[in-house]
Image 1: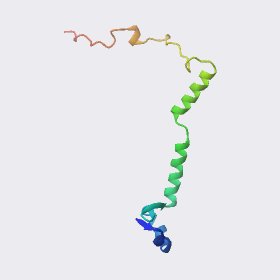
Image 2 (image 1 turned 180 degrees about the vertical axis):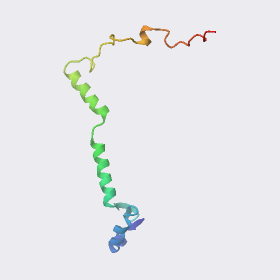
Image 3 (image 1 turned 90 degrees about the vertical axis):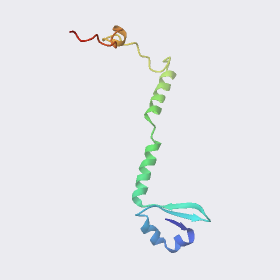
Image 4 (image 1 turned 30 degrees about the vertical axis):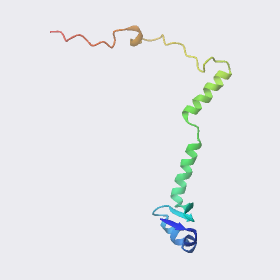
Length: 104
């Protein structure tokens, strides 16, 4: 529901009561100026806002990579090619070929 400032002031207890059902928008000359929400919704909003402030995993990895480059690594983490176990894509060029027809 929407309220103008004057009616929201006059019926403040009603505005607060209705926040349990939905947020109550308050307008000043057809411009939204405030929204009154329930305490529960406000707690959810604060949790959401705190989550947004935490760095993402991508940002954390970018920071680590930048640190490694600053310490002399050519392109962040240097990883040698895997050579200690069987790799069908390299060791068997026909790995993905269709199998021959079943024996008769």
